[in-house]
Image 1 (tube, rainbow, N blue to C red):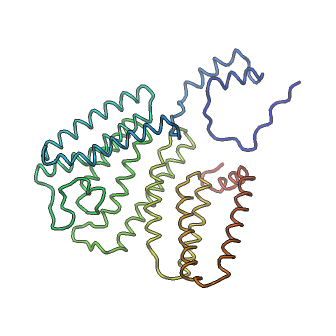
Image 2: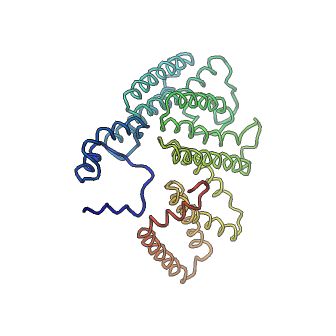
Image 3: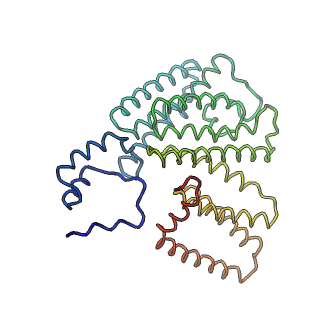
Length: 359
């Protein structure tokens, strides 16, 4: 009698299953050969496993080509401003957006989720350009006497100004409608990027706000960042229960950068506060490992490195013991990494059990 296979120590919550896997299971005697077709038909009736980005040549071409198209349409199109004028740019942006959206719809129907998401994101990225040009054409764009003249759309990606809020609101509306129509993860990227931009531009609202009021800017950025990370956490929780594509990545990325940047810029000058900042970033490294989001781990490691740099160049500049102590800490971290790798499955189970809603 053949002993049943021993289950792994830690079973993943989701698997990418192919028909060949069922056929191999039948060859191993785990299921009857006649059950393969019925089982595959049953599984195919459920939600298909979403196509996810991976580092392959084809996917690299997708994203690199999409980046070129987005840059050309949303940044460099304004070089033709003197030739086409505001109405010409508006009409051209709308036409290109409709063509990109039609291509996204066609690719989505054929199951090409990643290129469909890139084309749909291109259509959303053309919304602020069309909005900006239309406001110029209608005489609704407020001109101010500052370094931000508003005569080039590429300044939208360079300067912080409350006037961009109308563009951002239009982009968020378009992005929300696009996500409602096509549930594609990459469509979250223009939405998350726009929210990040909005967190900075709101620091200059209402008009007349002191541009050097850094405390106000940090507070706005922190609130937006935490809200975006919270929304990412909700989407992660829904995904763990219902399955589906990963819609939280871009919210985590821009939200974490906004919140971490605000916290990092809030240096009170107190050594106790700086030590607390280092401990916070250490927890952030662990938190990123627990939930499987590298952006938190990377930002936490950067924060710890900043604190160690402060100790090295400021507090212990002339100390001979500091390099030895720092080396000991580094070796201890290597040892902790080895321990983590050997017991990663058990550690993940115990830490995930502490999260709200864990079973």
